[in-house]
Length: 215
Image 1 (cartoon, one colour):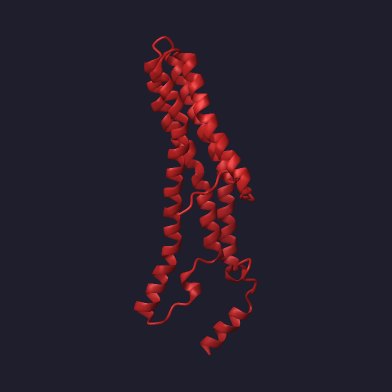
Image 2 (cartoon, one colour):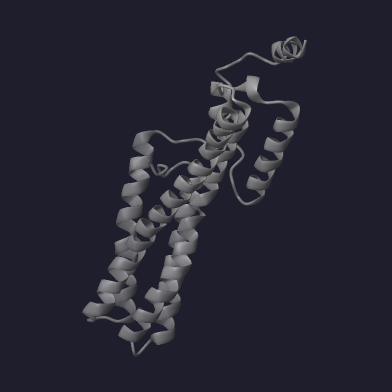
């Protein structure tokens, strides 16, 4: 009788497997909407769109080129003739891009592990405790967890902005040392450039213009 009741409940669920609606209950849908609303409140776009590969490639090339040029221009302005200042300016913004991607990738891997491990733990519980064979639905993430993973991964692109702040302080101090005649200006310009560059990269990533890190 219990199995019949469970089968009847399953037959009442939507069966559109392409959209994943079959795995979303009203409670799960409400929880997902709350997560999406919280994500949007943190600056996540409502409808995230992955841009075409050529658009992403153009955005990455532009980010790679703009960084060194902007940093080099700042160095030439505040400390003309200083090779050390030119080196700091040339490397600071590209490091924001590289380190930001590394931190973003680590965050995505952590989110992915947390998402997948829940299903694996559930499968182990079924095998070792319940002595029953787990179904694919028990192991694989459902639509709610997949959507939450994608949105948490996109939100993790804030790593660029955080790295930009840290790099701005470090590079700003070094630039100030290399520009004894304009220490305050050198620090302010370098810090602002790194912070704005990191914030811009975060915006591009959350709008789908930067490719998500692959694992």
